[in-house]
Image (cartoon, rainbow, N blue to C red; front, top):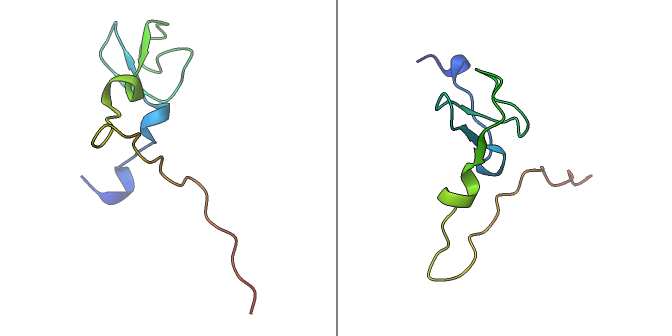
Length: 67
């Protein structure tokens, strides 16, 4: 697969459609079949390490330092 065709989104915004088994990042309707039977994947896939909460990834870039 060419690198420009790959797509990704954070686990907290990943939803599985229970009607057509597609994964999307819309919390209201499936992008493939428009179903509303969605399940948030972070609830079942986000595991904790040694009983502690898993660290959330940094989704913003820190501000650049001026010289």
